[in-house]
Length: 227
Image 1 (cartoon, rainbow, N blue to C red):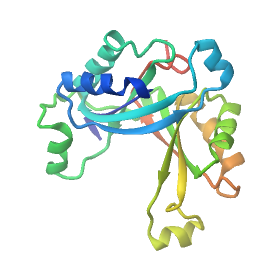
Image 2: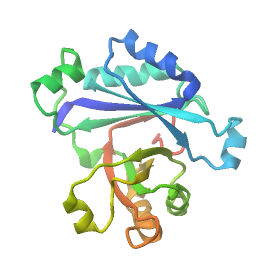
Image 3: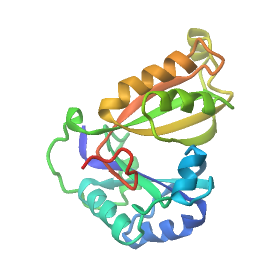
Image 4: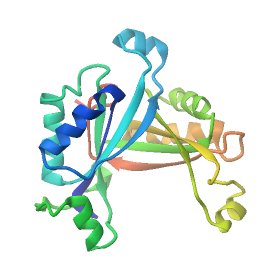
């Protein structure tokens, strides 16, 4: 476990994209990866928060552990990401990076300060990722909500695969897909994943594959944040 390197994922309204690009550059984080996506909040939630179901942008950066903690605090104090409807940010510990060249590219030669081992079992949150047939995101989210999930973020994607994958699983990942990202409390993770597989799994028309990653910290998503 590369306990001092984290993937910081930020999901905000599209109109804030340039502001967040400038924010990361301000803290010398120039290797940024962004993609357009859509939120899945129910209309009654959107009405309550006073926001619209607008297009989102997901930004991903790789940073050292000490910087990730500082950036999360600055996202709240400077960008107001914890205000309703503004966005969310999470950090995920990286297991490994392939080669010193990749490390230098992602980290931009920034100095890392080791902070000791990260115990995945103690992390209070999880990022659930479901990959389903295009147009199946509503089915997946209905299943997830039935098990306690609040909302998610949808990315439209197209996969690539080997001949083995198609023959072994009987499903093509090269076709257009919906990728649904759901942040949940760790204690709710198993039930949410089970509900998705029962209602939208490989044996259904949605043909969904689901997995999860441990999440170290969350800001801006009050429905799952621990006290």
